[in-house]
Length: 238
Ligand code: SAH
Image (cartoon, rainbow, N blue to C red; front, side, top):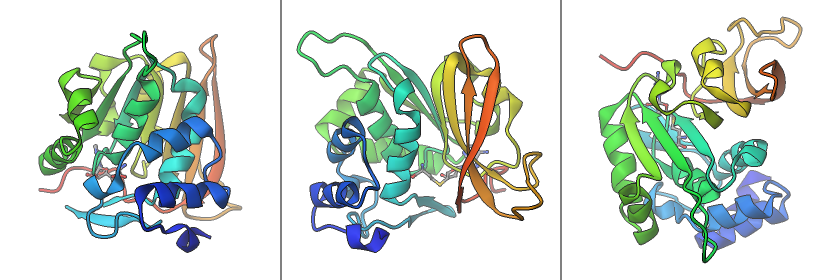
């Protein structure tokens, strides 16, 4: 149960998520322990719940961040290129950056994560949040992480192809431009609202995570994996 996972410290929160079987991958666990959520979710940093960050956006619950990383993990290697759409607080962008950075003594594989949000204040917030730690500042200085203001429904073609694409807001459809920007092989984790051309009338309305694989031969395989509740991927507010 998610509420049981709340901890007194960042490490305790992640250890509790692991004990409850909500995080199972050791690399994901290490990458999440290395990012202090208090820099990104100041009100209740170590609670396993989503929290408002302003501008009608929320930082997702830590167990959802864990799931997203675990579904993408085979495509998150030192040197991988990743697109994080709807980067909001910047927390997941930081965790993803830890997973694509080579921390071994002679490691030089330089991965990159591009965080995209369509609200300038949230782009600035993510940058400020990441600047609170020395590790975060280094990721920004070395351009392992870049935050960009753009409409994520179009992806960010300048950085394509991506080994992994994470979408942090519910899309109305499986935007073809995003699938186009995936590397072969590559994987996208995307919440899609029913009615977006992928609905199953038997299962009714709602949002579902879809995992989209682009195989080495370029063929596409889509799978609906679980029901979720995300803020929508929309036009920017006027
Ligand atoms: N992963 C983030 C989730 C933030 S909530 C976190 O855990 O902090 C979803 C984010 O998607 C919001 O910041 C919102 O501004 C952004 N968003 C919504 N529609 C968008 C669009 N069309 N393009 C880019 N970002 C969008």
